[in-house]
Each structure stands twice: as C-alpha cells, then as structure tokens.
Length: 268
Picture 1: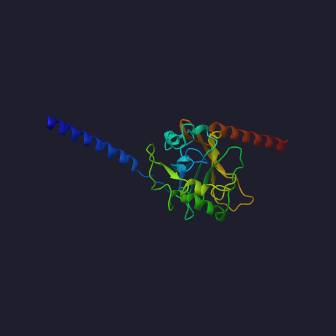
Picture 2: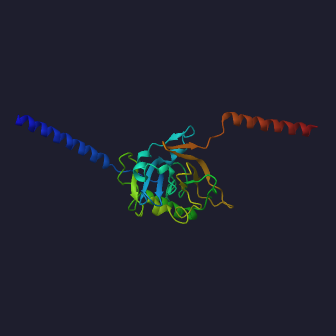
Picture 3: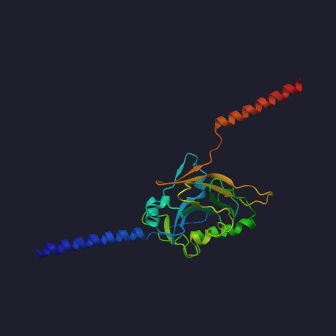
C-alpha cells in the first residue's frame, strides 16, 4: 500500500514539475523586434497601468502595403493583454492613449526601396497631416523610434513577452527605451505635432502615414497608406483603396471624349 502511495506521489510531483516547466517556458519567451517593424504603443497617464507601456510588434511595414487592401487582421495585440494591463474598462478610459510608429533607421535605404530616415506614424483623423522633411529633419525622429526596437533598457527586442502574445511586452514607462520615454513630450518622437496617439475612449481609428525624406519646398504632406482600427475585439488595418479597374476605364474614356471634342472644335 505504501509503495502504491509513493508511486502515486511521484507521478503527481512529475506532473506538477511538467506544468511548472511548461509555464516557465511560456513566460521565458522574448520578443523579437527589428528596424522596419511597426510598433504599437499604449500609455496611461494615471490609474491602473499608469506606470506601464503595453507595446506590440505588428510586423514589417511591408505587410501594410502588400495585399492589405482587403483588410489585415493584426493578432499580435491580445485584448486580454489590454485587460490585464489597464483593466476591463480600458476601452472607456479617458486617460489611455494608443498609437503606432516605425522607421528603417538612418544608416541605409531599406530592402523595400524606402529612403533612410523614412518614418511611419499614426495620426488622429481630422488633425493636421504631418509634413515630409529633409533627412536632417527626420533623422532625430528616426533615432528616437529606433530606440523602441533595441539598444536601450526597455527596448522591445529581447523583452519578455506577455502570456497572451509572443510579440507583446509590458514595459516600465520609466525605462529609456519605452514608448513613453521616446514618444511623450511636446511632440511625438521629437518630430510630430500634433502628437501621433489618440485617446482610447474616443478614437478607435488612426490614420497611418509614410514620410519619406524630401527637400521639396513647400514641404509635401505625408502619404496616407491606411487606417488602424481598434475595437473591443482587437486590431485590424485597412489600406487606402487603389482605383478600381472600372474607375480607371471611366477616367480613360472621359479623357478620350474630351480629346475627341477638342479635335471637332478645332476642325470647325
């Protein structure tokens, strides 16, 4: 009888040890983040989670151009992480803000052909659209966004992931590489004014802009490449629709008619 009890006890201990190891393995995962990835950041100015940034690597910016017209679901953001960090009422909080940013850095053109110091950032619909700047103007912004990826305490790359997402991490907002440390200030990342983030309770949609360095004057407005949509169910992206074949045909037909009429008038 004692032998059976001992064996049962050993089996139970082994089972508990396996669960412990599995749990440790889940929490031991670290986030991988690199230049060119879109970083989603949340910050609360007080209350629950007021000292924490929830940051999520949404993947390469190239994903937001290729095949995104039909809608792109972004599962990297787990709603449970928002609940765990900012409470079940996160969606109605007036002190919770969210935004996204990316850069290819200042060293060289990225693999997609974008110039070095290209910036990508969100903006609240209705606010002034950001303006492209020269490499010199955009370089400091690229440096601050790059700090989100790596090189500082609190940078996303190498941070421990949450238990709900392998690409998300809860980072102390006092850390030098955190979203709050690099984004917060009179303007976002030392470049964007108005700021790039929206209030969670009132802004569920943010435009996503591309800013390629340019010396044009007057300065060009940034290119709107689509919208990030945040709901109680998660995050998605809708690209700016390209002109349909029908619209292009109609435009071509309209031009043809205009040219035909001009030729008739010229003959008369």
